[in-house]
Image 1 (cartoon, helix red, strand yellow):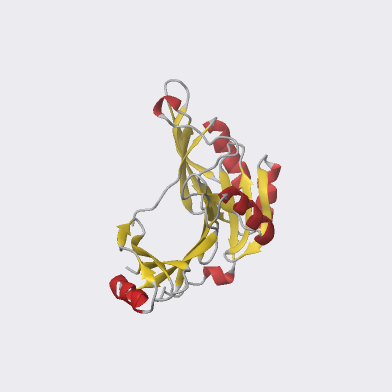
Image 2 (cartoon, one colour):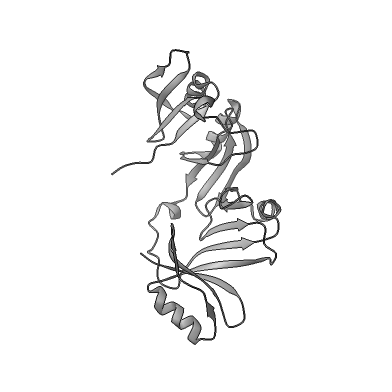
Length: 245
């Protein structure tokens, strides 16, 4: 089975190899590939039972490390003791974005490494380690908060519910890390509200049921997340249906 391997672009790959070894316990696999201009073209690290690739920046190829304050990807690393792992990373120069706290998936702390990559260090709870029951028709799959200002909503719920969110789903969109069911935030809405997504086993049958019950249903569309349809119930509340594979 193929595995997904993160490939990081960093400013100063030699320093990054040393830092990930000292702060996160990574091990260098083989020797880094050094280019003619002395930049690291490729290095492989073993980390937490997974593989991590990294290389120096190559702006001429459009490859650059993340900018300050703008991170599009978070790396989730399971660790035996998240408190100790966060302390170790901080002592090595990482910025603690969120101290360890308990959540649905376990105990998680978030750090930014010196190369501006974001790490979610997590000790899974025993409940999180157990297999989840299969999704059934009628189950809620996700919830999207539609608000005028997505970043403002992110800040509010992070302070109230201790959420941690990463950019995703548009210019002012955010995805809440580890929420069950999945939670997203979408900015730019003139009508604040929330839109749940419910699972169905036959979307045409479900659309007919919505209309028969006095609700409204649009046209079924197909996309990366499968077949979905926008609906409103008989009191005007919006929701979305998604067909199970």
